[in-house]
Structure formats: structure tokens, C-alpha cells
Length: 282
Image (cartoon, rainbow, N blue to C red; front, side, top):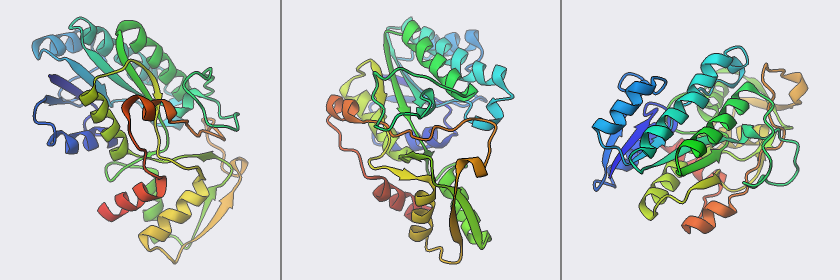
């Protein structure tokens, strides 16, 4: 099986590459914009055809949530149009695609974990373009697996965990939002789930995946500092209204993982165990 990974220089793309060594039976094509411009339909079709791609894991996306509010065209191209190109190209070969989506397809007004059948209601440009991306890949590829995730972090790239460690070492005090609730996702755990799906066979449809547990950004920061041994920085809780941002953030974005656990027979790690693993590697 020939598998294309897009966005290989991002958090999830890098984690996928680490795991690829354990799956030598597959031929991996790791690409970023330098190797393949996924916004170029002809380039996508040629790459997929010439390399006889059987499956695609699309890790590429426009993820700057606040900048997206003023960059709708670029965000739409990367999050909506490009995934449709990938899906259509791999469909011609009877292949599959794994599309990574987000909790931002919901507005965060629920008080119980979101299930896959809940009606999406994004209220940001980022969330809207990612939802349109879900619809596109499902339309153009019969074997489309969509995985919605949240609060992604890893040892690679820029993310909340690395930022809080850096700020905790630099500043005597930090204010962090306490009234937005969700669950962090260690990108390595997400990569493992994708590999499991590839191994067992892609079951098309929408799935939710994050680590287990529920926490606020404030509590998450306290845990990051505790596990990283940072004791000199005072972290104080902030209301969302005290830290206004261009894009609306969901106040509650806990994802229910029952479907992915039952479909693939997996156990999902607790968020703190995964955070500890990541910080030890950092």
C-alpha cells in the first residue's frame, strides 16, 4: 500500500513519520508544500496517479484560528478546497482518505460531550472552513474517515504546552482562561489511532478523538508547570471576556470517543499520562 502524508512538517505529520518505521510494509510519501502543493488540483492528481497512492492522511491545514478571521480566502483554500482535491484524486484509484478536523465545528454551548451525530454549528472562519472540508472529502471519496480532534500538542512545532513552559520559565505571573473546558490531545496518540485504522482497514465516517478526561486551559497550564518542574510562575485564572480574541472559542468542547473506541478496539490514554510522556520527551 502506498500512503501519502500531507503536512508532514506539522505536529501530527511529524508524529506520523516517527511511527512509520514500525510499518515497513507500507510505502510512505511524506510531503509538505515544497514537495506537493495540495491547493493545485492538477499537481495533486498527477502525484496520486504517478505514485499509485492507495491512501491519504491529510495532516495539512490552516490552523491560525485568529488570523483566519481576516484570511478567509486562504483558510478556505487550505481547509476546504485542498481536501476535496485530495479526496477526488484518491477516489479515482479506489483509495481512502483520513481527514483531520476539529472541535471548532461546534459552537461549544453544550454541557455534555459532543457525539458524532450532533449537528455542527461553527461560529468562526476556521470552524466553518473545516466543516466544509469534512463535507467535501465525504462527497468526493466513498472511503473517507474524518477524525475531529481538539487542543492538539506534541514535541514538534508551536503549541500550547511548549508556549506555557516557555512563558512559565520567563515570567513571574501568567493569566490563563479557566472558563473554556475541553480535553487536550497528544498528537502521538492521534497518530497511533490513525495507524490502527490503516492496519485494521478504514471504516468511513466521522469519529471524535482526544485524550480522556476534562480540564480547563487554566488547570492544564497548572499541570504543565507541575510536570515541567516550574515553581516560580504564579498562574491566575482569567474569564474569556478578560482575554478577547478575534475568533470565538468554544466554551465547552469535550468530545465523546465511544465510536472510535468501539470501532477499532482501542483504549484512549488519560490526558495527564500523555502530557507527562510529552514533557519527558521535551
